[in-house]
Amino acid sequence: MLNRTTIYRNNGDTAEVSFCDAREAVQNHPAEWSFEPFSPAQMAAAHAKQDERKGQGSGA
Image (cartoon, rainbow, N blue to C red; front, side, top):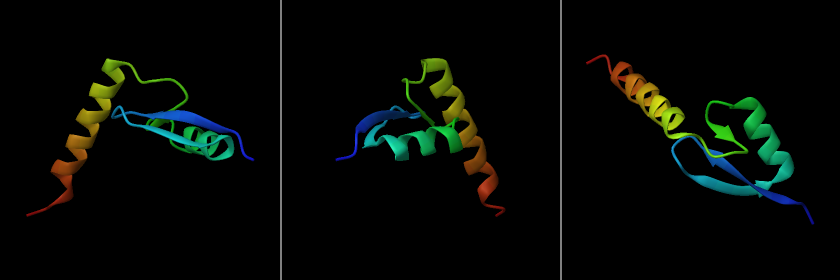
């Protein structure tokens, strides 16, 4: 049986996944996933960046 661990997303969500998958997510997407909860300032910065990307998405 694989060991499962909780990882934290920059929007406040959590996921319980195998340790191997958790490590891969945290290493490959450190701005989005962490082994520790994101601070309120980090979460606000992530939301601002996401809003900025949404504004650039449609050229209409």
